[in-house]
Length: 120
Image 1 (tube, rainbow, N blue to C red):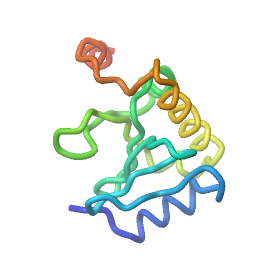
Image 2: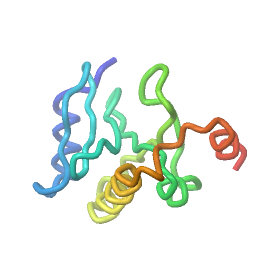
Image 3: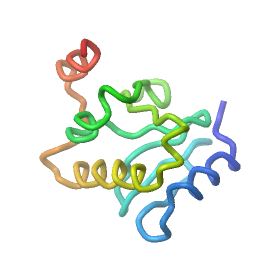
């Protein structure tokens, strides 16, 4: 199942500030970008944010994880009730983008780290 254009536009309307956030169509789904850094996905009408060092610190006890598409690295699923807090959403996206841009803090790919997250 792919994401509907209406859902992607709805998410963009909620999180966009016309400066930093945009959404780009990709293979029937959408990528979420903050200042040019891909920070997440909209797949199957669900919003996913990449796991980085600081998004893990912020979200590991608050959000579930899943792979946005088959074979993908797991990402945080953002609950719909969080969409109402635009400031919180921007903060999460901004933190994720800063981590991704900083080459020393790449998205989590380490299996040991992923196993540690699942245990907590």
